[in-house]
Length: 146
Length: 247
Ligand SMILES: [Zn+2]
Image (cartoon, rainbow over all chains, first blue to last red; front, top):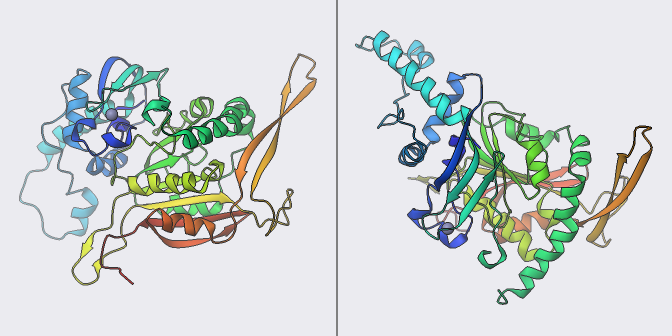
Protein backbone atom coordinates (compact mmCIF):
# COMPACT_ATOMS: atom_id res chain seq x y z
CA UNK A 1 0.00 0.00 0.00
CA UNK A 2 1.26 3.43 -0.98
CA UNK A 3 1.98 6.30 1.38
CA UNK A 4 -0.21 8.57 -0.76
CA UNK A 5 -3.14 6.25 0.00
CA UNK A 6 -2.77 6.71 3.75
CA UNK A 7 -3.72 10.35 3.20
CA UNK A 8 -7.15 9.13 2.03
CA UNK A 9 -7.85 6.57 4.75
CA UNK A 10 -9.40 6.77 8.18
CA UNK A 11 -11.02 4.41 10.67
CA UNK A 12 -13.91 2.33 9.25
CA UNK A 13 -15.84 2.69 12.53
CA UNK A 14 -18.52 5.29 11.78
CA UNK A 15 -18.34 6.95 15.19
CA UNK A 16 -14.61 7.64 14.69
CA UNK A 17 -14.94 9.67 11.48
CA UNK A 18 -15.97 12.87 13.22
CA UNK A 19 -13.00 12.65 15.60
CA UNK A 20 -9.79 14.41 14.49
CA UNK A 21 -7.90 11.62 16.31
CA UNK A 22 -8.91 9.11 13.62
CA UNK A 23 -6.91 10.83 10.87
CA UNK A 24 -4.33 9.93 9.82
CA UNK A 25 -4.14 6.32 10.98
CA UNK A 26 -0.89 5.54 12.78
CA UNK A 27 1.62 2.97 11.60
CA UNK A 28 2.99 0.21 13.79
CA UNK A 29 5.62 -2.39 12.86
CA UNK A 30 5.62 -1.22 9.26
CA UNK A 31 7.86 -3.04 6.79
CA UNK A 32 8.57 -0.91 3.75
CA UNK A 33 9.51 -1.78 0.20
CA UNK A 34 10.59 0.50 -2.63
CA UNK A 35 8.93 -0.13 -5.95
CA UNK A 36 9.83 1.44 -9.26
CA UNK A 37 7.22 3.75 -10.73
CA UNK A 38 7.96 6.04 -13.64
CA UNK A 39 8.33 9.65 -12.52
CA UNK A 40 5.40 11.67 -13.81
CA UNK A 41 5.83 15.34 -12.86
CA UNK A 42 2.41 16.38 -14.17
CA UNK A 43 0.60 13.65 -12.22
CA UNK A 44 2.43 14.59 -9.03
CA UNK A 45 1.77 18.31 -9.48
CA UNK A 46 -1.91 17.64 -10.04
CA UNK A 47 -2.25 15.32 -7.05
CA UNK A 48 -0.34 17.44 -4.51
CA UNK A 49 -3.10 20.05 -4.04
CA UNK A 50 -5.33 17.19 -2.83
CA UNK A 51 -2.83 16.03 -0.18
CA UNK A 52 -3.43 16.92 3.49
CA UNK A 53 0.09 18.12 4.29
CA UNK A 54 -0.09 17.92 8.09
CA UNK A 55 -1.32 14.32 7.89
CA UNK A 56 1.41 13.43 5.39
CA UNK A 57 4.10 14.84 7.71
CA UNK A 58 2.80 12.71 10.60
CA UNK A 59 2.80 9.57 8.42
CA UNK A 60 6.25 10.26 6.95
CA UNK A 61 7.66 10.91 10.39
CA UNK A 62 6.28 7.62 11.74
CA UNK A 63 7.93 5.76 8.88
CA UNK A 64 11.26 7.53 9.35
CA UNK A 65 11.19 9.79 6.30
CA UNK A 66 12.81 13.15 6.85
CA UNK A 67 12.54 14.62 3.35
CA UNK A 68 9.04 16.10 3.54
CA UNK A 69 9.15 19.91 3.32
CA UNK A 70 7.55 21.75 6.25
CA UNK A 71 5.28 23.59 3.83
CA UNK A 72 3.55 22.06 0.82
CA UNK A 73 5.49 23.08 -2.34
CA UNK A 74 3.84 26.02 -4.05
CA UNK A 75 3.06 24.74 -7.52
CA UNK A 76 1.01 27.61 -8.89
CA UNK A 77 3.26 28.99 -11.67
CA UNK A 78 3.56 26.03 -14.03
CA UNK A 79 5.44 26.57 -17.31
CA UNK A 80 2.29 26.41 -19.44
CA UNK A 81 0.63 29.03 -17.27
CA UNK A 82 3.57 31.47 -17.59
CA UNK A 83 3.79 30.91 -21.35
CA UNK A 84 0.27 32.20 -21.65
CA UNK A 85 1.03 35.08 -19.31
CA UNK A 86 2.79 37.99 -21.07
CA UNK A 87 4.05 39.47 -17.76
CA UNK A 88 7.50 38.12 -16.91
CA UNK A 89 7.96 37.30 -13.28
CA UNK A 90 10.91 39.27 -11.85
CA UNK A 91 12.57 36.22 -10.30
CA UNK A 92 15.45 34.05 -11.43
CA UNK A 93 13.79 30.70 -12.05
CA UNK A 94 16.85 28.50 -12.54
CA UNK A 95 17.80 28.03 -8.87
CA UNK A 96 14.27 27.44 -7.47
CA UNK A 97 13.58 24.96 -10.28
CA UNK A 98 16.58 22.87 -9.29
CA UNK A 99 15.40 22.51 -5.68
CA UNK A 100 11.87 22.04 -6.92
CA UNK A 101 12.93 19.08 -9.05
CA UNK A 102 14.73 17.45 -6.12
CA UNK A 103 11.76 18.03 -3.80
CA UNK A 104 9.39 16.61 -6.37
CA UNK A 105 11.56 13.52 -6.95
CA UNK A 106 11.68 12.92 -3.19
CA UNK A 107 7.91 13.27 -2.96
CA UNK A 108 7.50 10.85 -5.86
CA UNK A 109 9.65 8.32 -3.99
CA UNK A 110 7.75 8.80 -0.75
CA UNK A 111 4.17 9.04 -2.03
CA UNK A 112 4.14 6.65 -4.96
CA UNK A 113 7.16 4.34 -4.80
CA UNK A 114 7.19 3.52 -1.10
CA UNK A 115 4.95 0.57 -0.28
CA UNK A 116 4.03 -0.74 3.14
CA UNK A 117 4.25 -4.53 2.75
CA UNK A 118 3.47 -5.64 6.30
CA UNK A 119 2.34 -3.93 9.47
CA UNK A 120 -0.60 -2.34 11.19
CA UNK A 121 -2.50 0.93 11.04
CA UNK A 122 -4.03 2.04 14.30
CA UNK A 123 -6.94 4.43 14.89
CA UNK A 124 -5.98 7.17 17.35
CA UNK A 125 -9.60 7.40 18.51
CA UNK A 126 -10.78 3.83 19.18
CA UNK A 127 -7.45 2.00 19.03
CA UNK A 128 -8.63 -0.54 16.45
CA UNK A 129 -5.79 -2.07 14.43
CA UNK A 130 -6.00 -2.68 10.69
CA UNK A 131 -3.53 -5.21 9.35
CA UNK A 132 -1.51 -4.92 6.18
CA UNK A 133 -0.41 -8.24 4.68
CA UNK A 134 1.57 -8.64 1.47
CA UNK A 135 0.88 -5.01 0.67
CA UNK A 136 -2.92 -5.24 1.07
CA UNK A 137 -4.62 -3.40 3.93
CA UNK A 138 -7.74 -5.00 5.38
CA UNK A 139 -10.48 -2.71 6.76
CA UNK A 140 -13.19 -5.30 7.42
CA UNK A 141 -14.53 -4.77 10.92
CA UNK A 142 -15.30 -7.49 13.46
CA UNK A 143 -19.09 -7.76 13.97
CA UNK A 144 -19.07 -5.98 17.36
CA UNK A 145 -17.69 -2.80 15.74
CA UNK A 146 -20.11 -2.69 12.80
CA UNK B 1 -23.54 -8.18 19.83
CA UNK B 2 -27.19 -9.22 20.06
CA UNK B 3 -28.40 -5.65 19.60
CA UNK B 4 -28.44 -5.74 15.82
CA UNK B 5 -29.86 -9.13 14.90
CA UNK B 6 -31.53 -8.14 11.60
CA UNK B 7 -28.35 -6.56 10.31
CA UNK B 8 -26.19 -9.51 11.25
CA UNK B 9 -28.67 -11.83 9.53
CA UNK B 10 -28.25 -9.81 6.32
CA UNK B 11 -24.52 -9.84 6.88
CA UNK B 12 -24.46 -13.63 7.14
CA UNK B 13 -26.73 -14.00 4.11
CA UNK B 14 -24.58 -11.73 1.93
CA UNK B 15 -21.44 -13.38 3.24
CA UNK B 16 -22.66 -16.80 2.08
CA UNK B 17 -24.34 -15.75 -1.17
CA UNK B 18 -22.10 -12.92 -2.35
CA UNK B 19 -18.73 -12.58 -0.60
CA UNK B 20 -17.76 -16.24 -0.39
CA UNK B 21 -18.82 -16.84 -3.97
CA UNK B 22 -16.67 -14.01 -5.34
CA UNK B 23 -13.76 -15.16 -3.21
CA UNK B 24 -13.94 -18.59 -4.87
CA UNK B 25 -14.65 -17.51 -8.43
CA UNK B 26 -12.28 -14.48 -8.30
CA UNK B 27 -9.75 -15.51 -10.89
CA UNK B 28 -12.26 -16.98 -13.37
CA UNK B 29 -14.57 -13.98 -12.86
CA UNK B 30 -11.67 -11.62 -13.43
CA UNK B 31 -10.69 -13.31 -16.69
CA UNK B 32 -14.15 -12.50 -18.07
CA UNK B 33 -14.14 -8.86 -16.93
CA UNK B 34 -11.87 -6.74 -19.05
CA UNK B 35 -14.00 -4.47 -21.21
CA UNK B 36 -15.07 -1.24 -19.47
CA UNK B 37 -18.70 -0.20 -19.94
CA UNK B 38 -18.97 2.96 -22.11
CA UNK B 39 -20.82 5.10 -19.54
CA UNK B 40 -18.17 4.35 -16.91
CA UNK B 41 -15.37 5.03 -19.36
CA UNK B 42 -16.94 8.36 -20.36
CA UNK B 43 -17.39 9.39 -16.70
CA UNK B 44 -13.76 8.60 -15.81
CA UNK B 45 -12.29 10.20 -18.93
CA UNK B 46 -14.14 13.47 -18.27
CA UNK B 47 -12.52 13.94 -14.84
CA UNK B 48 -10.06 16.83 -14.45
CA UNK B 49 -6.38 15.79 -14.14
CA UNK B 50 -5.35 15.25 -10.54
CA UNK B 51 -8.81 14.21 -9.34
CA UNK B 52 -8.79 11.80 -6.41
CA UNK B 53 -11.57 9.27 -6.07
CA UNK B 54 -12.87 5.90 -4.96
CA UNK B 55 -13.83 2.71 -6.75
CA UNK B 56 -16.19 1.05 -4.27
CA UNK B 57 -16.41 -2.64 -5.13
CA UNK B 58 -13.59 -2.58 -7.67
CA UNK B 59 -13.59 -6.30 -8.50
CA UNK B 60 -10.52 -7.02 -10.60
CA UNK B 61 -9.87 -3.29 -11.02
CA UNK B 62 -10.75 -3.03 -14.70
CA UNK B 63 -11.67 0.67 -14.33
CA UNK B 64 -8.33 1.62 -12.76
CA UNK B 65 -6.63 1.83 -16.15
CA UNK B 66 -9.16 4.07 -17.91
CA UNK B 67 -7.76 7.49 -16.92
CA UNK B 68 -4.03 7.62 -16.05
CA UNK B 69 -4.29 11.23 -14.80
CA UNK B 70 -6.42 10.56 -11.71
CA UNK B 71 -5.67 8.73 -8.46
CA UNK B 72 -8.08 6.04 -7.28
CA UNK B 73 -8.32 4.24 -3.96
CA UNK B 74 -10.17 1.06 -4.87
CA UNK B 75 -11.77 -1.39 -2.49
CA UNK B 76 -13.54 -4.73 -2.56
CA UNK B 77 -14.79 -7.26 0.01
CA UNK B 78 -12.94 -10.06 -1.75
CA UNK B 79 -9.24 -10.34 -0.89
CA UNK B 80 -8.66 -12.48 -3.97
CA UNK B 81 -10.12 -9.80 -6.25
CA UNK B 82 -8.18 -7.04 -4.44
CA UNK B 83 -4.98 -9.02 -5.05
CA UNK B 84 -5.73 -8.90 -8.77
CA UNK B 85 -6.77 -5.21 -8.71
CA UNK B 86 -3.63 -4.18 -6.83
CA UNK B 87 -1.52 -4.72 -9.94
CA UNK B 88 -2.90 -1.52 -11.45
CA UNK B 89 -0.51 1.29 -10.63
CA UNK B 90 -0.28 4.02 -9.44
CA UNK B 91 -3.56 3.24 -7.65
CA UNK B 92 -4.08 1.35 -4.41
CA UNK B 93 -6.57 -1.41 -3.71
CA UNK B 94 -7.70 -2.32 -0.20
CA UNK B 95 -10.10 -4.79 1.38
CA UNK B 96 -13.14 -2.96 2.77
CA UNK B 97 -16.89 -3.19 3.20
CA UNK B 98 -19.03 -0.68 1.30
CA UNK B 99 -21.24 -0.13 4.37
CA UNK B 100 -18.19 0.77 6.48
CA UNK B 101 -15.81 2.63 4.20
CA UNK B 102 -12.47 3.60 5.72
CA UNK B 103 -12.33 7.00 4.06
CA UNK B 104 -12.59 10.54 5.41
CA UNK B 105 -15.91 12.30 4.77
CA UNK B 106 -16.32 15.21 2.35
CA UNK B 107 -13.01 14.55 0.63
CA UNK B 108 -13.25 12.92 -2.78
CA UNK B 109 -13.71 14.42 -6.25
CA UNK B 110 -15.46 11.34 -7.56
CA UNK B 111 -16.55 7.82 -6.76
CA UNK B 112 -17.71 4.92 -8.86
CA UNK B 113 -19.59 1.85 -7.67
CA UNK B 114 -20.17 -0.44 -10.60
CA UNK B 115 -22.36 -3.52 -10.27
CA UNK B 116 -22.03 -3.60 -6.49
CA UNK B 117 -24.99 -2.31 -4.50
CA UNK B 118 -27.35 -4.79 -6.21
CA UNK B 119 -25.63 -7.45 -4.07
CA UNK B 120 -27.04 -5.97 -0.84
CA UNK B 121 -30.11 -7.85 0.33
CA UNK B 122 -32.40 -5.18 1.85
CA UNK B 123 -33.56 -1.71 0.67
CA UNK B 124 -32.12 -0.18 3.86
CA UNK B 125 -28.67 -1.60 3.21
CA UNK B 126 -28.70 -0.49 -0.44
CA UNK B 127 -29.57 3.06 0.63
CA UNK B 128 -26.90 2.87 3.35
CA UNK B 129 -24.33 1.92 0.70
CA UNK B 130 -25.30 4.98 -1.38
CA UNK B 131 -25.13 7.16 1.76
CA UNK B 132 -21.58 5.94 2.45
CA UNK B 133 -20.49 6.81 -1.10
CA UNK B 134 -22.12 10.27 -1.04
CA UNK B 135 -20.63 11.01 2.39
CA UNK B 136 -17.12 10.53 1.02
CA UNK B 137 -17.65 13.17 -1.69
CA UNK B 138 -16.62 16.83 -1.54
CA UNK B 139 -19.74 18.92 -0.91
CA UNK B 140 -20.75 21.66 -3.36
CA UNK B 141 -19.51 25.20 -2.70
CA UNK B 142 -21.61 28.20 -1.79
CA UNK B 143 -22.40 30.82 -4.37
CA UNK B 144 -23.53 34.41 -3.83
CA UNK B 145 -26.48 34.33 -6.18
CA UNK B 146 -28.10 30.92 -6.12
CA UNK B 147 -27.14 29.51 -2.72
CA UNK B 148 -25.07 26.53 -3.85
CA UNK B 149 -23.33 25.51 -7.04
CA UNK B 150 -23.63 21.87 -8.10
CA UNK B 151 -19.85 21.48 -8.16
CA UNK B 152 -19.35 18.85 -5.46
CA UNK B 153 -17.71 15.46 -6.00
CA UNK B 154 -19.69 13.18 -8.31
CA UNK B 155 -20.62 9.54 -7.93
CA UNK B 156 -21.48 7.13 -10.73
CA UNK B 157 -23.55 4.18 -9.56
CA UNK B 158 -24.38 1.29 -11.86
CA UNK B 159 -26.75 -1.62 -11.10
CA UNK B 160 -28.24 -4.59 -12.92
CA UNK B 161 -31.69 -3.93 -14.39
CA UNK B 162 -34.83 -5.99 -14.04
CA UNK B 163 -35.88 -4.80 -17.49
CA UNK B 164 -33.64 -6.85 -19.80
CA UNK B 165 -35.97 -9.00 -21.87
CA UNK B 166 -33.51 -9.26 -24.75
CA UNK B 167 -30.66 -10.53 -22.56
CA UNK B 168 -29.65 -14.15 -22.04
CA UNK B 169 -31.46 -14.11 -18.67
CA UNK B 170 -34.61 -12.59 -20.15
CA UNK B 171 -36.03 -10.95 -17.01
CA UNK B 172 -38.53 -8.14 -17.48
CA UNK B 173 -40.82 -5.71 -15.70
CA UNK B 174 -43.00 -7.43 -13.11
CA UNK B 175 -40.62 -10.35 -12.52
CA UNK B 176 -39.20 -11.25 -9.12
CA UNK B 177 -36.46 -8.73 -8.24
CA UNK B 178 -34.52 -10.77 -5.70
CA UNK B 179 -32.83 -13.59 -7.54
CA UNK B 180 -30.01 -16.13 -7.31
CA UNK B 181 -27.84 -16.04 -10.42
CA UNK B 182 -25.64 -19.00 -11.27
CA UNK B 183 -21.94 -18.72 -12.01
CA UNK B 184 -20.47 -21.79 -13.64
CA UNK B 185 -16.86 -22.09 -12.61
CA UNK B 186 -14.78 -24.05 -15.10
CA UNK B 187 -11.34 -25.20 -14.15
CA UNK B 188 -8.75 -27.44 -15.72
CA UNK B 189 -8.18 -30.09 -13.13
CA UNK B 190 -5.33 -32.08 -14.62
CA UNK B 191 -2.64 -32.13 -17.27
CA UNK B 192 -5.02 -33.52 -19.89
CA UNK B 193 -7.12 -30.39 -19.48
CA UNK B 194 -10.31 -32.17 -18.56
CA UNK B 195 -12.73 -29.43 -17.70
CA UNK B 196 -14.60 -29.74 -14.48
CA UNK B 197 -17.32 -27.29 -13.63
CA UNK B 198 -18.94 -26.23 -10.41
CA UNK B 199 -21.94 -23.92 -10.14
CA UNK B 200 -22.12 -21.12 -7.57
CA UNK B 201 -25.14 -18.90 -6.94
CA UNK B 202 -24.86 -15.19 -6.27
CA UNK B 203 -27.63 -13.08 -4.77
CA UNK B 204 -28.79 -10.05 -6.81
CA UNK B 205 -31.45 -7.45 -6.34
CA UNK B 206 -32.52 -6.48 -9.87
CA UNK B 207 -33.33 -2.78 -10.04
CA UNK B 208 -36.54 -1.64 -11.70
CA UNK B 209 -36.82 1.67 -13.52
CA UNK B 210 -36.55 4.65 -11.14
CA UNK B 211 -35.43 2.57 -8.16
CA UNK B 212 -31.79 3.64 -8.27
CA UNK B 213 -32.78 7.31 -8.38
CA UNK B 214 -35.12 6.65 -5.45
CA UNK B 215 -32.25 5.06 -3.44
CA UNK B 216 -30.02 8.06 -4.19
CA UNK B 217 -32.67 10.59 -3.13
CA UNK B 218 -33.36 8.61 0.05
CA UNK B 219 -29.62 8.69 0.78
CA UNK B 220 -29.54 12.50 0.56
CA UNK B 221 -28.20 12.71 -2.97
CA UNK B 222 -29.14 14.77 -5.99
CA UNK B 223 -29.32 12.90 -9.31
CA UNK B 224 -27.67 14.92 -12.08
CA UNK B 225 -28.03 12.42 -14.88
CA UNK B 226 -29.33 8.87 -15.19
CA UNK B 227 -30.09 6.26 -17.80
CA UNK B 228 -30.02 2.69 -19.08
CA UNK B 229 -27.10 0.94 -20.71
CA UNK B 230 -26.83 -2.72 -21.72
CA UNK B 231 -29.17 -4.29 -19.16
CA UNK B 232 -28.11 -1.87 -16.41
CA UNK B 233 -29.46 1.28 -14.78
CA UNK B 234 -26.95 4.02 -13.98
CA UNK B 235 -27.02 7.42 -12.28
CA UNK B 236 -24.58 10.26 -11.63
CA UNK B 237 -25.22 12.04 -8.34
CA UNK B 238 -23.79 14.62 -5.96
CA UNK B 239 -24.54 15.27 -2.31
CA UNK B 240 -27.64 17.41 -2.03
CA UNK B 241 -26.54 20.96 -1.16
CA UNK B 242 -27.65 21.82 2.37
CA UNK B 243 -29.70 24.88 1.49
CA UNK B 244 -30.38 27.24 -1.39
CA UNK B 245 -32.03 24.65 -3.60
CA UNK B 246 -35.27 24.30 -1.73
CA UNK B 247 -38.14 23.60 -4.08
ZN1 LIG C 1 -11.52 4.17 15.22
